[in-house]
Each structure stands twice: as structure tokens, then as C-alpha cells.
Image (cartoon, rainbow, N blue to C red; front, top):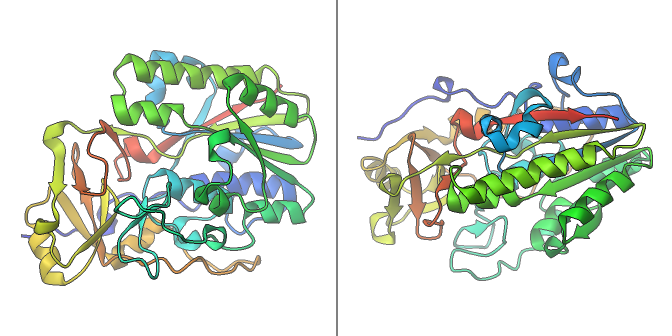
Length: 379
């Protein structure tokens, strides 16, 4: 029998002032005087120093609970609070919230795998390839609403700059996320540190720094081994090295896009095409979106270690859709699901196009996936 629950049984991300997009909105308001979304709750906003220029360092995959690791001690020392990642708790969704200052319901990117108009199979929104591994051939530059965060900053006289691995230069995801933002590619950690500290010397800037190593290690090796410890140590060193180089008038804020849960082989529920006739499966392994006939969904749900949430109940998880004084173009018309299966603790739902090799997964509403740190440093 299909297990159904209402979203009221779950804690949706706090889009009223306690989420990643509220943090971005808080920085935008300080730099420009306005934002299309509310800033942080006062108790959280009060932890961020006033500054003329901000560095926002996003450490991919660093859930708040992961700061208990000994290698994260320098990060834990600067922890000022805990905020929520947007739903689903996955990189492309959170980075879209950074690039727009909006929750997923308003920026439109609602999963790792998405359904695009004119594409019969799901498309990976990080790599922009379809389920067969072929380039999607989709113009991502207009994916997110306009003006995005970077365009609004420029109009207000604030220069937006992002520091990223050089390999991300001019990728489809970069074109989607950083329209209007100056892109600085780096290949070495030393270059990242020096670029961030140097760029922060000029007032009226928002410098967004993306650090991916923790995510990669947790995915492939879990959070118990030397690979993860090494990546966490590297992230902590980046934080410390930038912090000691912050010039007067600058401040650094740190956060993440999601945390992790570990999934053993016994918790990986594999879904073959034969098992899902007439159904389209996309989204994420911990929050699997489904489109198709109700009776087929019913049949699939009978065997899944998951809880079904109809589409209507997902709206609150994607965030509010309030009016604001900054007009935005609508996001690209990505296809919404009929609902989602949220995997139970210790489980991942894996159609053939989703990676089965990993140990660490995210995308769901476990507090370990949702809760991300709010870190601050100032001269």
C-alpha cells in the first residue's frame, strides 16, 4: 500500500528568515538596500558584521553536524548559527538560490535531475547531460529569473565576483548561474585564498567563493575515512587563511549547500526500467520526483522504503511565492512532478541514471541534509 503523508508532518526549510536564500538576501540588502526576499531573522543577522565588501564562502557538502569532526575545529570556532538549505537539499538547487536570492519555488530549479520542455528524459542540472549521457543542448543562460542577484548588484553599483575552479569556466551550469557575474577561475588552493583576500580590498563588492572538495570526498568515501578528513582539513585551512588576510572594511560569511547522510549498500533501492513502466523518475536519490499514471505510482510505492508526497504538498517545501517590489521574469518552465517519494532514513532511491557508487547522499529532509552552518570572520 502506498504510504502517504502530509507535508505538515515534516519541517520545511525556514524560508521566512532562516534559510540559505535569506542569507543571500541579507547580504544583498546590506550592500544595496533591498532584496526580493526577506533577510535573516534578527538573531541570525546580528551575527554578521557590518562591512563594505563581503566574501561569501560556500563549502559544498558541509552540513552543520559535520562540524563535530576534529578536522573542522577551525570552522566550528567561527560558527554563529545554523540555517536551512532549500529543498531538495542538492547543489544545483542551492546554487540557484545563491544566484537569485530566492527559494526554489521562485527560481524554478527544483532538483538535481530536471525535466525540460522538449526533452523526453531527465537532464542532469549540474552537468547538463540527459539520462543517456548526451549533451542536453539547452540554452541555460535564460534558465533563472531576471534580474538575478548579480544583475541587481551591478545595477546598484556593487561588483559581483565569483571564484571557482577553472574547470567550471563557461560550462552550461556556469552560464545558468553566473550571468552578469565576473568569473575568476583558479586551479590551486593558494590562488583561491589570495584571490579572495585581494578582491576583498575594494569596497562595494560581493565575492562568492565556491569550494567543492568536501562534497566530492563525502560522496565517494563517506565521512569516516582519511579522504573526507583531508578534504575537511583543506576547507578549514581555506577559511583560516582567508580570515587572517581580510582587509579592513571586509567580512567573510561561510555556509554550505547541503549536508550528507550515509547509505549502505543494503539501503540502495535500485529501480529498473521494467519496474517503472510509464513513469518518469527524476529529482534526487533522497527525494525522487515522479510523473505518470496514478495506478503506476501506487504500484511503485508499495515496494519503496519511502513516503509519498503529492505535488500540492511539495509547494511548501519549495518555498513561498510572495509578491515583491522587484519585478522578475518567470523562471524557465521546468516540468513539475505529480509528487515525490522521500526516502526513509538510511535509504536512497536509484533509477538507472542516478549514481549507485556513492556512500554519501543528500536531497532529502533529514536534519543532517538540511541544516547548514552560518560562519563569520572579520579583521
